[in-house]
Amino acid sequence: MKYVDNERGSGLVYMLWIMVSSIVICVIVLNIAKVYAVKQQAANATQLAALAGTSVLVNAGKDAIEAFDQLSEAEDVILQLEVDDGKSVGELVDEKAQEYRNQGLARDIAYINSMNDILTPRMAAYGLLKSLVYDQIKVSNGKFNQTVRDVVKKNGGNEERIEVSFTSDFRVEVEADVTYESITDTAEEYIKEMTKEVPQKGYGPSLLFLKDVTGGE
Image (cartoon, rainbow, N blue to C red; front, side):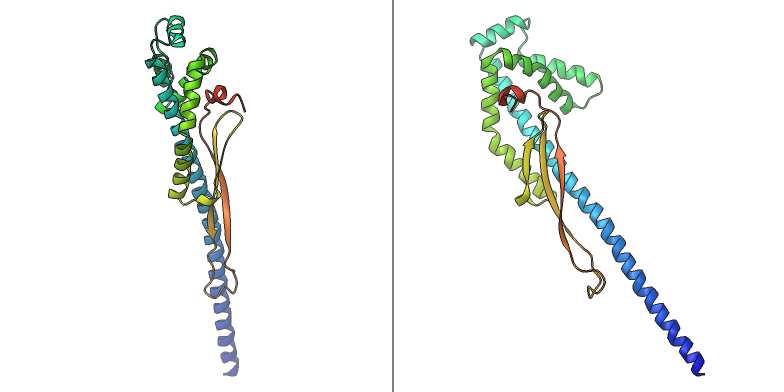
């Protein structure tokens, strides 16, 4: 009988060991999954922020185009209309954007590509257009920064650690992080609590027309 009792005791210990091991393995798997989830969250936050910031700059470019086209008596506008067979900059951009859309590009990307194609050479040729684009981009700077921060925050990013810059091909680059908090066992006996910042970067489409505004810096 004592031998049987010892066997039952050993079996109980073995079962407890299996249960504890299973719990620890489950917690480890959950932590790995959470790391990937947090990484994806950070990637989404920065990507959406970069796109939102890009949208602000594109709208500033649109405002500059509209302002230029309305100055019908300005020398640069008169010259531009003569060179472009009477078509305004806005009309040229819209036509080029439609060409890109006919090639299957999304509306926003088609318009940005069109701005790059139409604005870049004309900003180099017409100082008034370049000046208007510069002014509108400068005016939108505050809105640009606030929009990026708001989008990062809305998507779970840490707004106090946001870096915004431009790549060599003038794409908005947003770097931010999301806080990862580890899942632990109840007593933190096997897996200790840990907090870590998971950084990611997001990029918008290329805004080559900004090259003339910044002088390529």
